[in-house]
Image (cartoon, rainbow, N blue to C red; front, side, top):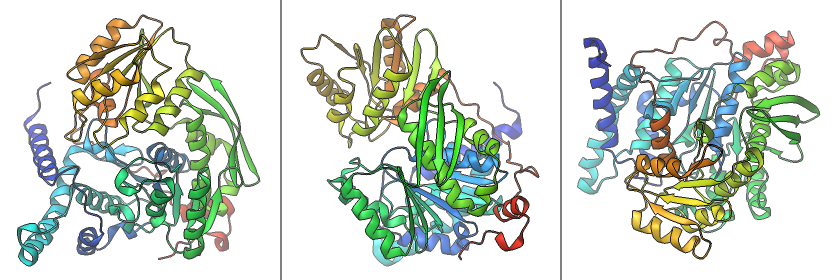
Length: 489
C-alpha cells in the first residue's frame, strides 16, 4: 500500500522515535527509581493526575489489566491502559478507551519526553562519566504513558508492572488499587522462591490502598499480609471476598457466575479459554469494585456483563486460523504452560496437538517444555525474535531431552514463520497447532496470520460517554453527593 506524503512523514517520524527508544536497550534494567523519578518530576508528575490500578504478579497481569479496562469502558470511565511487552507494535502498550496510541501521537509524545530524558542523561554523564546509568527503554516508555494519559485526559490509569514491583518504573503511580495475580517463580533476578519474589512484588502496595489478590502459595500470603499491615491497606482475598462460583464451557469461551462480596453476577460469557482466565475475571471484577467503591453496588448487572464479555486479550489462547486450528498462547513459564495445557485440553477436542515453541534464554525452558510433554504429538522448536532469545541449539537440546523415548518427533526451524509452515504441514484439519513459550514468539506468529493494521494518524477521541468520570458515575448512580468517590492525593 502506497502512502500519501503526509502518511510517509508520520511513518518516518514514528520509525525515528522508535529507533531512538530501542537504542536505549529494550532489555536493560537498573533496579532503582532514581531516573524515572527525576524524569517524571520534570514532566510535572503526570502519572499522579488520575487514580490508578496497579497490577503485578507472575501470570495473568495483561489479561487482568485488559479486563479492568473493559469494565471501565462499559461503565463510561475513560481508562488509560499500559501493558507490556507488546506482540506486534510498541503502540499496543499504551491505549486510551481501548484505542492504541497512533503512530503520529507516539512520535510526538516520545520527542517531548525524550528531550527531557536527554537532559537527565547528559547530567548523569557529567557527574558520573561514561559509566553513568542512563534512562532505560522501559523508563522512557512508562513516562510517555503517564504523560499521554494525563493529556487525554483519562479518568483512571491501569498500569501493568514490567517486572517485579518495588523497583519497577511504574511504581510512581498513585496506586489506589493494587492487584496481585498469582505469584510464582519466573524471573530469577527477583528471587529463587515464591516468597522472595513476593517480597519484590508487594512493593507496589501504597499506604491505605485496596489490595486485591489472587489465590497464592501460603508463604506468599504471609508476605502479602505483612505488607498490607505495614501500609495500613485493606486486602481482598480470592476465595473469601470474591470468587468464581461456577463456570461451564461455552461456544467461544466460557460461561461464568462470579461473586464479589455479597453480590453475585451470573451468566457472564467470557470470550477467553481456561480456568485461569475465569480466575482473572473474578480478580478484575473485584479490582473494579475496589476502584469504584459504592458506585459498584448500584451498577446494573448488564454493565458488568458487557464489560467482561467485550474483553479482548491477543495472544492468550487466541485462535488465528482454522483447519488446522492455530492457537497462540504466551505461556512463558511453567505455571503459564500448565495453565495453557489444561485450557486446551478442556476447551478443544483436537485429534493431535502440534507445539511450536521458542523461549527467552533467561526462562526455565526445561520446566516450560515439561508442562507440554504429555499433551503434544509433534514439536517444532525455533528461535524467538528477540535479542534475549534462547539459541536454536539450546531449544533443540531441551526438547530432545524432554521428549526422549516418547516417540514424539522434534523438528527445528530457523524462525517462527518456518516453524508455522512445518507445523501446519504436519497437522490435519481436525488437529491443533499451539504456538507458545514467549510473547515474542506469539507476536511473530500473530503477524503471520493477523498483520496489524498500521493506523498512522487515528487520534483517540473521547466520546461524551467516555468522558464520564468515576466521581460523575457515582453521583449519577447514587444521586447523592455525599456518596461521591474521593481519591487521596
